[in-house]
Length: 363
Image 1 (cartoon, rainbow, N blue to C red):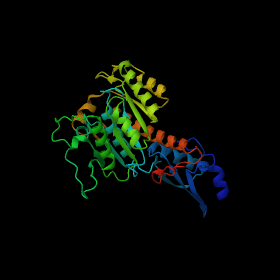
Image 2 (image 1 turned 135 degrees about the vertical axis):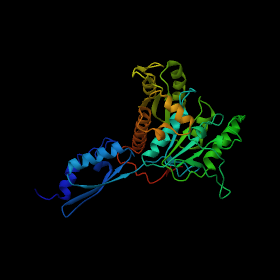
Image 3 (image 1 turned 30 degrees about the vertical axis):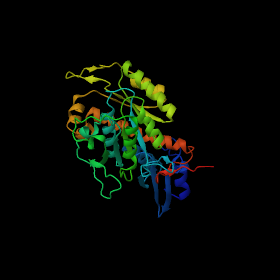
Image 4 (image 1 turned 45 degrees about the vertical axis):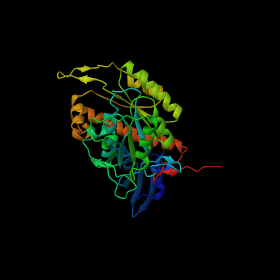
């Protein structure tokens, strides 16, 4: 068998398709640095999703095309474009977790998505944008008051390596109510973005309150949002409010990255599956939003128990069905973000992900 040449390696690798972008890797620039030295073929794959499954698939396809290749795999998280006054220029992607309905599990989804994204090796922050009903301190098992080392910017509190900010950190007690009008809420959210030292992050996840009011509008006005994860439960009464949130996102030009259906079913001690809230609601919302259904999350008392103890299920019991659903949702979300960036840039070259890009303003 003859030794490989650069030309033969290129010909073989030209058939390898990027699993995220569904185009030839050599063509779009996700397979680079191809060399042949002493009969050894070397290359670097630049994967735009941190998913281990995606990395494994890339490695398998490349090694199938060129057996014995020395392949280096790099994760390149694509990044949003920002305007000159963006308050968090070091954050590559901003993800809003929202729903028009209360009680569907937005906070549970937000904390578990955050930890699931972090489990893939990315840098993730969490902002509790529910000013009137902050849940993140309880669910993440953290309390205390943020401080400022330099007198200019507030250092976020952190647990599990996740920087966090919440109104709950600023209250004297967990039972204290926030009685503010809209302009004060707007000011607090602005401070949580501008005056907190978020640093360099791949993803910042925002847990939004229910409804279609001030918070989503403030976020749309303050910064370039990567997209929205819409949370729903299957029953019709929830869907009607979620549809309104989808319509609001369209008006505010907030892309919907995907839908998570929470409390999809319950499995009793005998192993019988019960769809307590009906079925198919998440698919209906996804179809309405023209977005993927990222996951269906079962109803499990362990989610409530671990959440109350400040240890989200993804961290406490990653091998459970519920945790695996959140981990799968994070995988699908990272892929959806990469695809959206790819489409935004014309779909010819993969995003480089070197940092937030500033929009050029043409006058």
